[in-house]
Image 1 (spheres, each protein chain N blue to C red):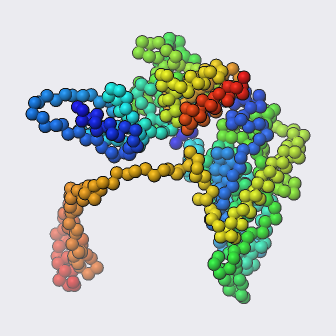
Image 2: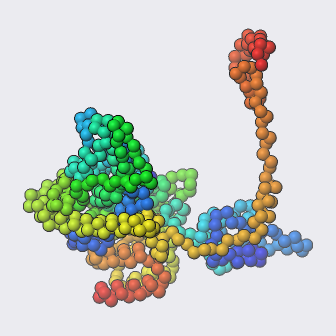
Image 3: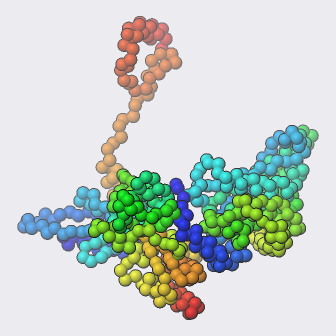
Length: 368
Length: 245
């Protein structure tokens, strides 16, 4: 499906609105959208909603042989996918620039910053290590996929529990969750990305751009930071020229504030489901979906016409034609050859039939 | 045929599903006087021999004297002949413009289909402009075609528009409510502040008010009208009118 093109009047209007510091959804220039994090019933599954942008992340693990260059470290594998249901602009199986950029930024933010202790994932040095696989799927695209993906990935990693292992000599026993409680990953710090969109040659700036604002932007700056005020990665795309002072201002004041906000929010959202789990209460996606809203999927009971259902059903059965008779069991033609049904007369190579006939007669008399 | 109207009458206002059938058996009356009544089947109803079948899920509606249709909710537009839509020009190739109307295919718009356009005097249409036009050809077998003039050759409000203002998308049901002759929503909106409004039947709406802030207000008011009763809408509009004044 093709994406709707952006018309000239929309572009002009959006740029004019940015100049007047007005945003389409009524936010201020430095306002973030509402973040909603829900965890699923499995460990390591979470959905993040940033306004209308929805991202799903699932973490899983597997025992594999380690890389030759690092025999004592576990492996982290990141994969981000743009599902076609997220936006008509995403086509399946197409390597777009956006996909490559998002994947690279997610890897840089989480792998290169060494937020997960990979040494603790080693089971038998040089032979078996845990491979942690983080799959992020974009479910709905309304701008700022990078932030949502990074929040989803780090929340899922904190939520994830890997199975417990016991090593006796060369034997490895992996315990199921019923036998022994699974162990959480050891996470040093939690880096979170914050995106800034620049307009009109870098003169105007918006935080957390929505999809339409992203279409008219000149450039994008993504800064990943953690709670200890350490910058984990900076990426600037679009070729805008930024002054050093501008970047410092952003980092020192804005990024830290957002990071703290998101982090506190995540902590709050994170502990309650864990408490519920311990107390045996209900948890998971189904519990977190709102039911009383007009846009929810719940419907009142509607009466269905049920009279004469049996009679109409038997009427339909009587009216339909009986199916054709099933074919009889296969006929054994020769040793190792059986025939089901009758084939059509072979109309090719009529000369060869005469040569074949005596041969088939021989085989018929020979075996069976 | 009183029987036909009677068949429909019990179901008016009820939810029907695709596959529901209304069948009419002509009464075997001896007089031979068969009154033929005309019934107009609107969207969602289809005639199949002696039956009328429902092909969309929704509520059956009736308009005097003999029009029946199914009211259903939809956001995706399917081009239909005679409907006026807002399109975005995506390409200029030779003599025709390719226009995106939100359907499965892009519509084609000939450069001669504008008022006062001749081979020497080409209209000033750029890629990315908004056009308001009508469909002359729109069926499932061919590429749809738009024109920006009516049968007399006059523009009649159609053509390129929208130097400023904002384009956004609404559901088809809401758009039809806005286009109704005595639309309450539009009347209520007019009382707040003056603005220009172009409504396309493909769900696209263009709004322009004096300032950017007012345009944004009208946009969000229209988007929120989707699921509100008229009472809630009037209270909301009143609050906005008092707030903005």
